[in-house]
Length: 249
Ligand code: NAD
Image 1: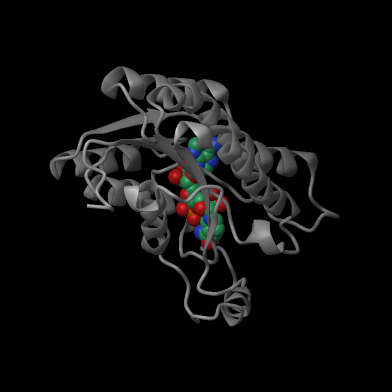
Image 2: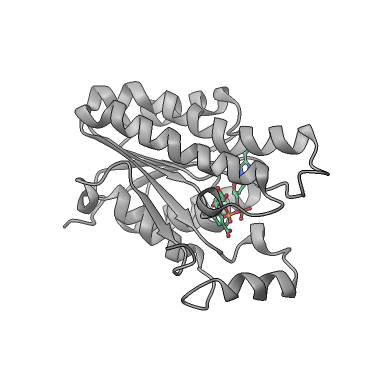
């Protein structure tokens, strides 16, 4: 079956909640053995792993800051030791530190760029060699529609998410000859902790720009990741898949 991930191994970063969690659950339901990382929510991460194991899936959890290369080394290394392959890598970990440029400080810039963009370099770097040896693999990087269209108050976030797009297209060109695909998912407005703090006014202004007139669920995004990670998408690489209800077109 084109969407089956039976026998595949997958690693998802930043998956204790939100979109990452939905991606983990979806890949596991499709038959993959799933490893995931988280930064601080140990109880939620362990509960997710237990939930997968109880439903018959194998699961590995790694705590660490995705912005640190040591965290990628530990997760990819641990996964290879346990399962021997890394077939799917989903770089999902991300944060916002919004503010108009006038008030944005260096720390807000560095935190967002290193968590959102350097983390992608870190995990791709660690997956590069094993995927090359396997002559197979698929990488899905989580950008945002903000990286495509921009947003006032999000220069740091938009830069990190646009960076992911350029990075992914370049890596897709590097790895294509080895049968490895690299794609990007660019969600619009998804209901998670990340967007929970939006005011009603900001929320309704945002919804006005969405053609489908509703927000996305984490599952809407996870379905797109599942497609790109599956054999159904094996002739797609360097693509940016908008999952935004028609916000940008
Ligand atoms: P969320 O805040 O609910 O979850 C973010 C996850 O990333 C959490 O599990 C968190 O622990 C993890 N994380 C954060 N910093 C980390 C670090 N340094 N190391 C390891 N893990 C870390 O947010 P979400 O909405 O689920 O976002 C997931 C991804 O989707 C992010 O990359 C985000 O930019 C992107 N995205 C979200 C939206 C949206 O509307 N929610 C829209 C577009 C893109």
